[in-house]
Image 1 (tube, rainbow, N blue to C red):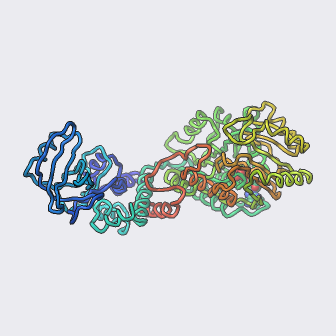
Image 2 (image 1 turned 90 degrees about the vertical axis):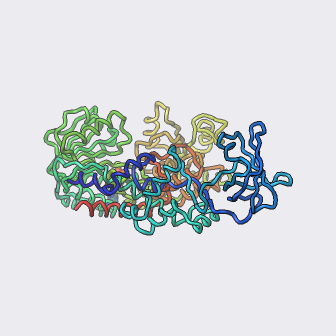
Image 3 (image 1 turned 60 degrees about the vertical axis):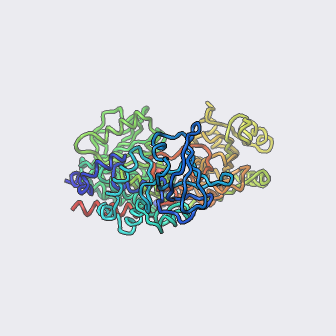
Length: 619
Ligand code: ADP
Ligand code: MG
């Protein structure tokens, strides 16, 4: 029923128009509407001819001749005291036909001075004056395209699409400008801010409407309404508001009878595990499965589940090397991708931690697990990679999203952008921290020396640190002894020199300070990950961004922000403005008007409007 209702939504009055819209290369009327003209031709007659300006004027052909690859004609206009010389390069037969003595035409082009003469090169012949004609980028012929736009992009149709009147009028005007509008357009060199807002809104609204209609919903294997209070009672702390909100989202998902598709996004340390465990309780006594990308993580989750869930919940652990508990009896099965190759009992709830860290093959096996059958399990993904909020809203058209923005305890990390001249002070800071039993991580952009990079490499710097400090350890991504070095450093090291590729899998509870050499070479997301390693246990933390460009706005902005979602937004903003270090470009749909770094409010409003519309039509 719902599918049917969704399919017919909105486009019923436009069945005939759909073909035309397709012909123009678009999927919806709104998409056609937000595809604006690349320019306008104003065919109002000029009242004078001024050198250096584009004019439209009537003229009579006095003479015309071919001169090698040009056609040169003389024309007379009432607006000029002398003849105007017309030059057409590479003329077509059409040009010879219209430039015949005695013929009158309306011409348009830029008036130039050529010696004592006035000249106009490659003028356009205007067939109808007094118009402002939009020109579109399209493979279709302009007049055909224009006719389609004229007949479809109209306020009444835009209203039927669900747009509000104000924005509908602004958008119609773009395609049917009047004299006053076009004057402003030229004066300000483009659309006004209200018009641009309307375009952004219409684009977002169209996206939500279409995705909403496309999104398939399946019946859940079971609707689940377990009691989570026995779990909550065991916790020695209060859940954060964001954790509570995510859990509420999930509880209502699981109850609803429709198979859940939700993504919970929260920074490292935001407390996603508690949300997973609450979900297990909401499914209990039905079975839940949780997959983690590494066996270390799987084991950690198992330990936490053991610690926090009531004893009545039977928990099993499956990794390649180990199997604890009986899968058939377990209420909660935790494991790595090893789970995918095991005979698993049915489970109405499937969860995955950090899905992007699984291989392609495993991801598709997982996908299959949750997308076969008429009834599907509830499926919840957890991600520790914050995305810009606006991106999250856009993504929410296809999968429900819960953001966990706050962390249970605010970390106290001070961030400083530093240069060469500050280095002595940082050295003193490091001496003090290490003397007091805390640890320091220094991250280098490269292992070996390189001319291009402008910073010392790990190898070049090793000596300096070893001369000045004791307890210095060195490792990097390709170091085969990496795990040993890290383990030993964790126990008795003071300073660890490493590269960004080193995954510090083990926790370093005494790590108070990180120095990032060449911070300007790194994306903000990387810097955020690195900074996230210090002060995990509530120590006062310090992050020093060592750069040759210590006036960098990007680094300054980073130093002032801790929220991962805000950092993701800033990252996008600075990448777009060209200040981009390591180059992973945001994937996903690209929009003509919406800016993921700036348009949170507009996208939110568009989503709400689309939702309201979808709900209304559903009843
Ligand atoms: P994530 O998986 O999102 O990176 P975790 O779930 O591992 O984060 O949580 C990080 C730490 O915070 C854990 O030690 C966890 O026990 C603790 N924690 C989670 N929620 C809270 C809370 N509401 N109050 C205090 N501590 C919490
Ligand atoms: Mg986690």
